[in-house]
Structures are given as structure tokens and as C-alpha cells.
Image (cartoon, rainbow, N blue to C red; front, side, top):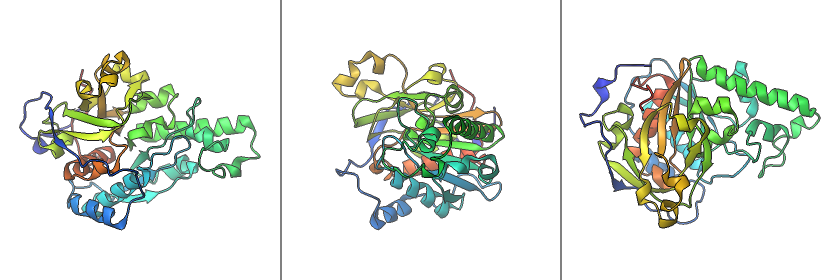
Length: 324
């Protein structure tokens, strides 16, 4: 899918730019976002969007986790709401009911954000986790389905997955943040849509990220400069091997700790951590950042997320053809 995007592009050479900026260091144990933290994000967030919305936009933020719980989930949800409200680019609706993915409900939204929607192994299917009441941290999340037969639960899980696939293919947007793509991690169809499946990650550490194509409008936030922040260095499998997407941020594996650098599973491939891709008539934006709320405490990261969401809603048009 080719679109005109030159008006937004910076005039840099289309070669990787090495990381030079550093996000704030983690402050220890992650605590829920305070009023002071939200006020900081409000101050740093862009006052206006890069693209004028073509219509009033509604964005669903789905933040349910049945497996590993990322303590950055409420921070990420707050960031997205602040970005939409301050810029006027979109309205945010928060809903963690899996039935929001039914066709008659999902159609109300222009884009969906999967906010660290980690599922339980080995099945790695969040819909089934809820239907089987297998969520690690909420033993009541699936009570309403307790009288359903296993076949009925599987059938409904399949329907919800197909509804999500059809939704994006019809022309809507999907944003996966950090662990968001593990929603249906073992689904080949879902993996093809989002660009890959989660494999594993080395320990939390400083991660240097380089800009794959500095003149791309979705990287305009960084003004040609890569950056360093503390994160889980996510690695991917499945559809990722084909790299059927437009890469945005690349992890510099040579800057990881010695144990990570010595692992061929880490260094044996190019490690992208953010990309965009068309899916049918729709659009997908994957952003690996971040396990840590501090990663959001820069104006550049906030602009990056706002631009990525606007790409997903169809308002920020740019070249999203896969780049080999």
C-alpha cells in the first residue's frame, strides 16, 4: 500500500541512525500512575496531532491480561487517553470485556489498542483463558461462562478471533503495545496480521534502538536520533521471520549485556521492535516499548505513539509497504 507522505518527512538519509538519547532511568518498583505522573505526561504530550483527523475517531483500549501482568498497563492506558484528549485526535474508550470483540460492538471503533494483553501458556489464547476462567490474577473474570460446554467455549473463542481479523481487514486499525501481540500468540492467522509472535526476551536492561529509516514520517518524533531506554528486549518468531512489514525501530543487539550477546537466539537475526503493516484494507502498528513507565517520559516517545495510533486510524498516511 503506497501513500504520499513527503510533507511530513524529515530530510535525512534512509540509513539507520544510532541511538544517542536516553530515557529517564527506572525509579525502582513500578507503582500505579499517580496524579503527578499523569500531569507530567500531560505536559510532555503533543498539543496537536501530526495529521488532521478525517472524522471523529474512537479508539478502544483493551487492557486485560490473563497471563503475566505488566505493571505498566495502567500507565500505558493513561498515556493513550492523554494523547487522544490533548491533541483532539481521538476519543478513548476503555473496555476489558472480551465480548467487545463481537462484530456488532467492535465496529464502533476506528482502532483497537491491545495493551499488554498477555495470555496463559501453553495455549496462549486470551479469549479461551477468560472463557475457561483461567486468568492468573482474576478468578472471576470468566464466571459467566461456567455453564458453557468446552465446545461452545472454543467456538466462541474462534468467533472472537475471526471478528478481530475481519475488523482490521475491513479497513480499521490495530495497535499492539509491548506484550499486546501475545493475545493470540499461537494463532498463525493473528501472527500474520500483526507481523509475528512473541518468542522470549533476555532480562530487563538498557536497550539501544536505532531508526531504520529516519525520514519516515512515523519516526519524525525522534528528529533523526535513536535512543536508549530500559526495557525487556523482545524477540519474535513465526510470521516475524518473513518480516512482512515496514520496520521502524531496530534493537542494537551489540549493546545488550554479555549474556544476551552470547546467545545465538538473540544475535542470529535482525531484531526490530516496532513496525507498521497493512492487513487487507486496514493497518497494524506494533510498538515494543515498553515494560517501564519511564519510557513514556519523553516528548519524542509520546509523539511516536500518537503518530502510530493516527496511522492505525487511517489519518496519518505514509508508506507502509514491507521493506526488505
